[in-house]
Structure formats: C-alpha cells, structure tokens
Length: 312
Image (tube, rainbow, N blue to C red; front, side, top):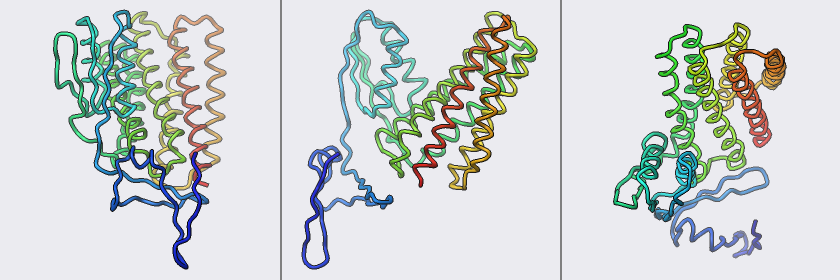
C-alpha cells in the first residue's frame, strides 16, 4: 500500500502521481490511456502498455519427484510467465514437463528441445474476456464428471469409468487458464479476485476427488448401496452450487435463503458420510473422497458469500 498527496492544478483540477514501480511493471509511457473505475471510496486504476514477456530459467534437481515437477510447471504458468527455460539431466524430467504442458496448460507450448534443456513459450495471447466463459465450462465439466462417473459405476462399466476420468485434463486446463488470467490480467472487480481464485482452485480439487473415486472403484470394484445414494445426493448439491454461482455470474440477485439452505444440506450429508465411515464400509476410500467433495463445495459456497459482501 502506498500513499500519495493530492495536488491542485488551477481552480478545479486535482491530481496524484502514479507509483514508479507500478508504471514500469505495466510498461506505461506518457500518452498511454489507463482505466479508472469508481468502487465505493476507492478509485481502481488499471492499464498496460506494450506487453513485455516475463521470462525465467529453472534448473530441475535430479531428485525432484515427477508429481512435484508437474505441479511446479503448472504453477509457473499460473504465475503468468510467458517464456521458461528448463534445465534438466533426465529424459523423465522432460517427459513430465511435456505431459503437463500438453494436457493442462492452454497457450503454452515447447518451442525448443535439446539434450539437457527445453524452452516453453506462450504461443498465443490470453483473451481475458473469456474468463467468465471458461469458468462456466469448468463448472459444467465438474458436474458432468460427477454424473458420468456415478452412472458408469452404477452400471459397472469399466470403459465408461475410464472415459469419465479423461474429463480431468479439461478441468485442469480450464482451471489453470482462469488462475493465470486472474494473476496476469486481474479482474474487472479486484475485490473479488481472492475469492474467485479460491473457488477455482477448490473446483479443480473437486475434480481430483471424483477422479480418485474412479480409481478406488477400478481397484476394488466395490461400492455399497447407501454410498451410491449418498453419491447421487452429493452430486445434486454440487449442481445446486453451480446454479447459485451462475446466477451470481449473470449479475442477478443471489437468493440468500437458497444459499443458506444449501449450506445446511451439505452439513447434513457430511454427517451421513461420517456415519457410513464409522460402520466399516467396504468402500471407505470412496466415502473419504465424497466427504471431501462436500467439504470443498462448502468452502466454495463460503467464498460465494464473500463475493456478495465484496459487492456491497
């Protein structure tokens, strides 16, 4: 947080200076236009000059686990980097970088591949105007995964279960895109950014939980009738959250009563899930994932309340 004194010019003009670091970071020059939005007692100033690609070079330790390397690569993407050079000593490291780049990172591609290094570059610019559309696709993708996985497990159709799992790549891709937009381009309503980021991250995690359910079933081939019933009820609650969020996204008044009722329903289903766990079910692995879906859906709902407060 920086402070600036108001300076009077003439009889009616008041001005403040812009922080030098912010001006340099956004590559602004004399004559560039900036946007000024009034947000209550705040004036939100935003603007970008000619885009400068952010670059970095990363040396991968030999003992870095595959999953950690893939998460780290995705984190660089979300952080807004456009050009990354990786230095490594194993083919496995390159394969992990290539896998996550190809599957989960929109607009990034490997443009150079040498013996002990590769270079990733942003091959297309991000269209921040697509943020809402991609977030909607993320919501629909997760609810589709929840429905498809349940139906496939009910029908004991192994191929359909595996097909449902393939939706996770699209979910990850859409989530990473939205997070990169928020960090690199910001959002039209800055007060909402931390809550939107949290919702997106939790939605991605919910996708992981449904993928975990599929893995559990493929491994053991067991699911209790009561667990199946809970599975359907949890999917319905997730779908309720989607509808609540999309109403908010369409700038329609969010029904507080509906949101409060959804919160109560989630808590009740959590109690049921814990009771089933205490009963030594044969499908405890699936129950753990389902309970986590409930917990993360409740966290998303909490952020939706915070978004409403930010608007006020």
